[in-house]
Amino acid sequence: MNLNNLLKIALKALNNNKMRCFLTMLGVIIGVGAVITMLAIGQGSKSSIKAQISEMGSNMIMIFPGAERRGGVRQSSDDMQTLKPADYEALVNEATTIAHSTPTVNSSGQWINGNNNYPSQAQGVNSQFLEIRQRSIAKGEMFTEEDVKRAAKVCVLGKTLVDNLFPDGTDPIGKVVRFGSIPLTVIGVLAEKGYNTMGQDQDDLALVPYTTVMKRMLATDYLQGIQASAIDEANTDATIEEITEILRTQHKLKDGDEDNFTIRSMQELAEMISSTSSMMTVLLAAVAGISLLVGGIGIMNIMIVSVTERTREIGLRMSIGATGRDIMMQFLIEAVIISVTGGILGILIGALATWAVSVLANWPVQIDASSVILSFLVCTIIGIIFGFYPAAKASNLDPIEAIRYE
Image (cartoon, helix red, strand yellow):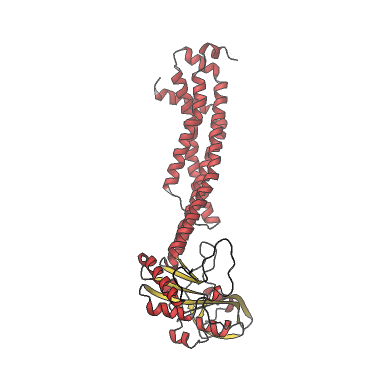
């Protein structure tokens, strides 16, 4: 019997049991839809995080006080005071592969303007912060190196602070606000960036000369960190080696002594986040894939029931010349049709669910063509694998016993 006739017989058999056929497909539809949606969410999050890191500067390098510790060992206060302004000056004077750099010193507190107040940080930096973090000024200007030298009482506000301190829309430029008890003149407003993938408000910040934060707010003589950017991304590793050598010399560390500072690059952070995101995507896909496996078991279960119900039909067809191979192909085709049709519907459902997640939950999603192709191939293979046993069982029936079956 040719394939065309077998296909017609299979379609007719499925058409006679439309509801049962649809319910059998449902497991495959849900499985494929869930796999595509989960992979789209995982891939979208991964791409969004990479984009956010790229926006912050893929060649950015962060230096923190204290040695890297593992196993949850707590660092003492002395360990956290190992970066000094002199270390920053040494990097500025000696490093040849650093494009921009800034000390960082932060203080948390309440920003106040008249009856309006908002809790946030005063982020102490210098004027090169904008180049390192790829930020820009929307209104006014950035404070200068002269402002840094004299610890000027000036600040540049993010849009979130402007909205909360000046809710009536007043132009903040030239106005005096207070951080705790310290008056600061607003000289600029940062361009809006919105929320990043991790839900952090990138406009909830205020930039202040780091010397102002150190002398007037914290009364400290050490830095909480240093941020720098390599000349280009390809030179990041060389820049880290150069920074390490300069700081070890500056801190008078001997060969074999552990670094009392920690250096992290955005490349390293991107690789770590990408690895974690990939692992989570695989986990989500595996969980969703379980429902696809359950759908395959459902196909096998229904096909076994179908073989039992149609035993007499099988016997009659074999008695008039149908071979065991014809019978096996008929039931195998039925299983593959159920699986493939369910896979196509599952792809459509998955695309619809992905769109809903993007619109309703405002999550970053990205449907990868490979995930669609893979899901379709898997559901086809599942149809063949789980349809083979019922088909083989039908082909091995004895024609005489099958005709006499009640």
